[in-house]
Image: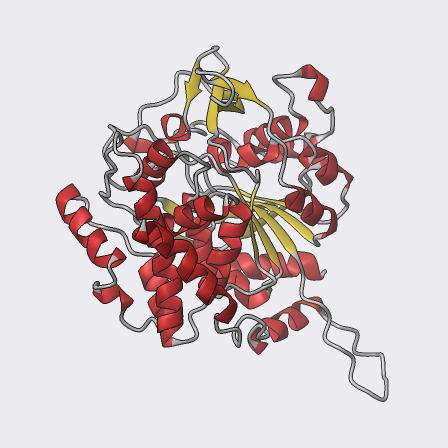
Length: 451
């Protein structure tokens, strides 16, 4: 019982005394000056006092936990007023093991984005980032041994982390460990486990709130207060993603849809060539749950109200590159999302992928537009909840990486009302192929919102 009290007692002692000097600090001046140059403030106006700097643009980005991470750092130079909307249906790696043993929503994508947004301006901030970003070895015995060193405070990962931060973080790691020990019938595998995922899970279970866990993680890693990491569904329940193919086949589980694995804890390889092709194209994605019954059944969860609030007010809506049906569409099929997006007149930008994956084999650009439109209209499924909006009400601009593999069928795009296509400089990633050059992509977004 003494160990069990460690989590909340340390938490209550330390949460009120976290260092706060960095939380409210303004973004770097370079971010502000970049946006000023993009926004082209009026030079003809003369006043006794200098004009205040124009507000930096606000964005909402629908993405998964991997592909958009590569441009997050560059985006912070333009603006920190970004709402990152992420799915809670990831069921791979250490996330799957946490969900299997402890239940609850998947936090892997959220943790990944939080780490990308975390502060790097001090040596302690870098130490906290290194700790929460660390993965344990693949070998189960070595992983378990290293985990004990971490949770007991003896690991070198704690070097550079001050006592208040150390005790706060460690309290929730201990709480996570205690929750595992309370389930003696389940053997937890620490192989390739993420320390950040374990901290996140401990906080979520302690607070019984995913939003509270995100708030805690954001403060510990000193994410700018204007940057929001929002689960598209605010829930403490486990949700499973399902999909229906055009040939009627139903697949359950995000990993099984996107990149089936052999059940090992090895890092997922998302390249198209690493997975067998689907028997036909994906028709729709939907959510499944065991809540209330012993079998998986389709459910219709509500969108996070914070996401809906942000959608109503941001200056630009972005559908990021990544896994179309398992990273982007799960956030779009919820009630209220399509209704609000279709009502907005702001830039609505689809960032095309640079290469194919298992979900989009043989797709053209217009196929991506159709998939997003169908998801937002909820075309398939419960007909009582469907919309009939046009593609141009959801997407008005297409960004395409230069030399990307996916053909841009201009005529089909024009027929759908998508008239603005912007080619953005790209670079070659040896693992995934053509990807956006981060600076060029953010510059293109700045130009779009500034003019």
